[in-house]
Length: 96
Image (cartoon, rainbow, N blue to C red; front, side, top):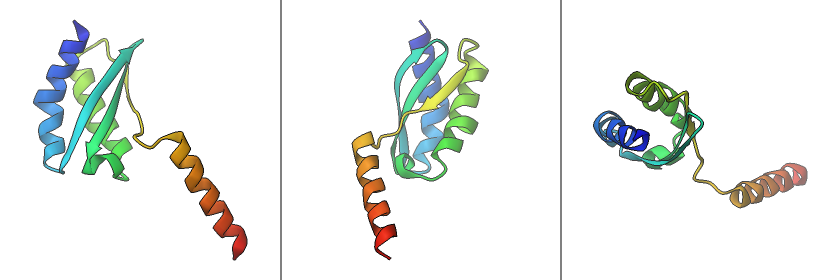
């Protein structure tokens, strides 16, 4: 089953790398060749998270699992939180 192959790649190739940076990863789902993951720990808020997913996670997946077309990072920040941050930033911008 493809989910088991994905978990194996995550456990053997991805997690050891992320642990060096006090991070972790959670596999969420695969749909139409797109693997969705969430970064945890220090990696969740890292500015390099997108590049980590592309260069480490996606590369490892594609190397081992031909069915994987892409790996997509699912943000752990909710849209509600992002909207609140936008409102605060916009309010501060106009108060200056």
